Every structure is written in structure tokens, then in C-alpha cells.
Amino acid sequence: MPKKNSQKQRNASILSCFIGIHDILVLSQLVGCTLYLGYILDFYRLKIFHHIRK
Image (cartoon, rainbow, N blue to C red; front, side, top):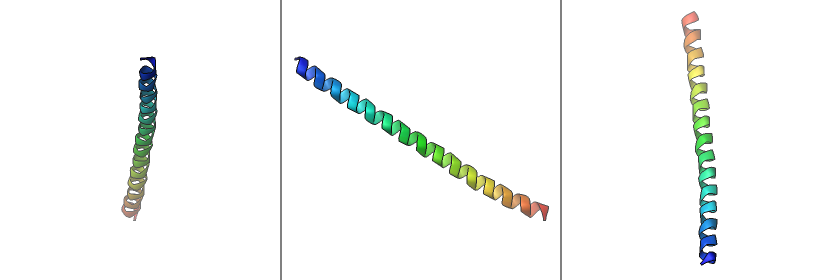
């Protein structure tokens, strides 16, 4: 019986580790997307700003 329990525990820890990695990946993707969108918006804003100033 104890052997089965330890196997379950090990599987749970591996699963939680994978979930942690997945969370980090998702967060990094979100950060990357927001930075990318911010960069594009800044670029267009500058273009429009220069267009208006002319």
C-alpha cells in the first residue's frame, strides 16, 4: 500500500511542476504579446503624430 501512495505523490508533484512551467509559459506569452502590441501602437501613434504635425 505505501508504495502505491508514494507513486501517486510523485505523479502529483510532476503534474504540479508541469502546471507551474505551463503557467510561466502562458505568462511570458501574455507579456510578450502586450509588449508587442504596445510597440505597434507606439509606432502607429508616432506615425500619426508626425502626420498631424506636418
